[in-house]
Length: 252
Ligand code: PEP
Image (tube, rainbow, N blue to C red; front, top):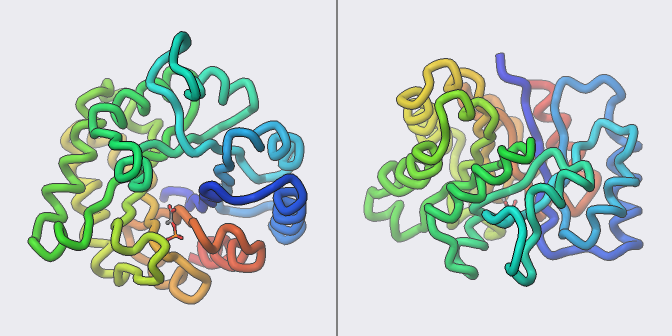
């Protein structure tokens, strides 16, 4: 049985005052002994603030991107070792917004995944198809292909250390959600791809769904056999919504 995992992605939102209020409200609402892993992936400048704010709580700290490089002349980039120094446990890699607005390729996403693992971080590897790709019946080829490139860069023994997030691009921030059945089909396909690399890892790797997950649709999505949690954008900015999703995961 895989432990459910709910991770918030604040994207480029927040400021010192609102971050403090949000974390304090989430902390206050989290059950002391939850059966769900919870994380918050914050903009890099706020890592130290949120590191201190979540210290001693059940909230794991995450970043939203990482450099593929270890150190050097890469202006503006942040290395995995730097994230680890701020007690980051997780880092999102290959979010569709980075793929779309920064031209990140599958190969770069694979290199970032490997860099994160090398520093002991858990990469949350995002994959997802556009609406045009879904309508052209290319979902499995696109999404499976994105995962395959990452898996090819890893040793079989490293696979169980990743988290995968299926995030249909057409569902991110749009209010449109994949139906539980649509998401489950893709998650099952992704688990089968993982099994081709490592049968053992495939049973352990958590595959999150992301794309307009909200309190009113979380329960049905999280009830599906291969949906092991959520990567939450907009709803992670409201403590009550985020907590309601964590609660839906707890009761599944
Ligand atoms: C995301 O940014 O990863 C995401 C899923 O966003 P939203 O929940 O707002 O669709």
